[in-house]
Image (cartoon, rainbow, N blue to C red; front, side):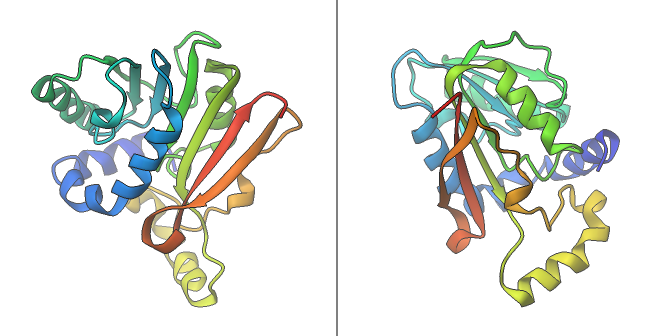
Length: 207
């Protein structure tokens, strides 16, 4: 995976992303927002905001910033914000999730939906999410992780050489996500398609 191949893939996806992937990922998207935004006046960063499908679900008294590496996806998100009058969206910025040009500790919650297996270096993604999240804040990741079922796992292994074309790594392991003494999982929740995608919930600081 590299930035040019990711941008090329999501340039192709942008026109039909909502129709194809919107319904499949809807359940996980709504759950992530509910966990990310339970209180008023939270500052929230959504990493890999894409076409902005999740943006209408945030509380109207929140302050949401979205970033993405794909200008075509962001253009769809900006049109959604304008069309639906989503005044709680502060900004939609083209940015590399592994090198965020954002202030440290600026956000109460940082969310990455369907992004961890897309970026070239998941460890860098997590480190940047931690940096921009305030101490004690929440970090929420939803992603597909490699199946434990032998048939599905074999299929994922066969797809791996196509990662650049697909735009994600199909065989990413849940345990490949880092975990530290001051960054531990609060919970792992099965989401879309009977748990084929999972939500991983962290606290950014000691439990």
